[in-house]
Length: 251
Image (cartoon, rainbow, N blue to C red):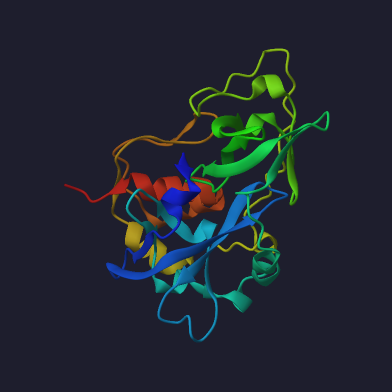
């Protein structure tokens, strides 16, 4: 889990070129999905137009940098479907009011946290309305509505004192947020096939590659070939990003 502050300003490195090619200037959020859809990039092409990096095109979002396949992963704003409208909406989680489902104003968000693999917002911290020095936390499982003007909380009793607490009672029914697929319509693109496959081919898995259900798709030590890379890529961007993290050079 990473805070928005951890991601803002990170340098962007191309794995093929081994060069820094920009920095994260802005996080563009799709509120109806509760997810970062793309990054606005600061680089030498700023004077020409707005440059963006779809979240699904990032290979990794780490402590030191965001890694991508190559400079081609960074696109002009008008080349990514829906990106212009998303940026014009300029949705900011920080500062959004927190409302209980019974209509009580609880405070305002002062930070949010994301899953670096998917860009999904997993938790928010907020300043309590009557005491700005008191910070509380709610997790995604406790969000009823992720709106542009307010975030509605299902149960005040499930608000926590820290990020480490995320206990939902067994009899509580969690209504999941929409988790739209990473498609072009959602302002995302996947890396092009040939260069990325060339980069990964011949590497080995440093650990088992598993899906969300824990099923092993490829065992530790498996040598990556084009067929396996294509199969994992077709399974979706989250698994493909996981593949990139586990792929290492053969000894």
